[in-house]
Image 1 (spheres, helix red, strand yellow):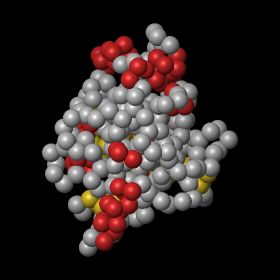
Image 2 (cartoon, rainbow, N blue to C red):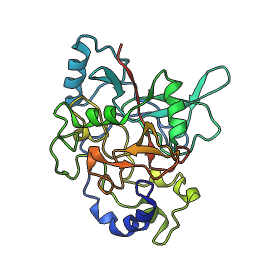
Image 3 (cartoon, rainbow, N blue to C red):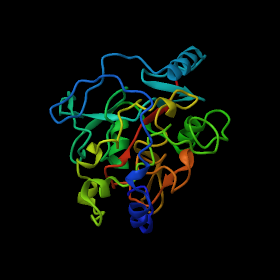
Image 4 (tube, one colour):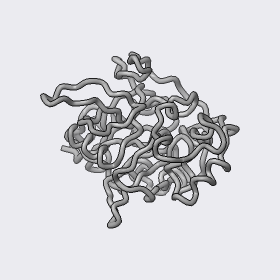
Length: 282
């Protein structure tokens, strides 16, 4: 799994199994139009789940909290409420759909955010940063991710509060998609780790907003689980960092909001790597 330091990859494949599939979706996502490849376009309805409605209304009413649609206000900055999907841009800047099950190598893409869509995996930190920039945003810093995930108390380890994991509230703990799709002994190489079948694995990756209990105190979904989220930081060795875990695991490299992996170069991507964007509040 990409979430692990290299020496731990084979451990997760054995230690985690499909027997922990009790992590069910708390609420079905909104309907979305299906593309030919099975991916989806945003649903026409802008309705949010109940908990998010309250937080969204509070943020919208707060003085000096102007954030674009689809973003939540958190202590002077804005953060996407959902993990990002992308659209392709042509030379004239016109948008066309992109399958969330395929890499964006060689493409110019723009980050988008909506409820009830398949978020973009298979994306590197470098590509995610450009996608955010093309949307007038940027990748989130570590402190921004942490605060949005924990809430104002800053002491919680999970969006739903507390320091103890509660199974089923976030999309995590599903085990190895590579093993489930390709069988025991499948190589964890880059080609296989970017195979479109991995995020099509039934019960694996969820659409944005599908886990209602994953909402943070600021009305932000899936900061723990679903997809790893690239952050803004790049280490001196050229490695980026991604946080929050993904649907296979959100514990081994730190529990919940504390989960961080720094084992991969900024140009690395696989099925588990996604992102969301931030920007300063106006």
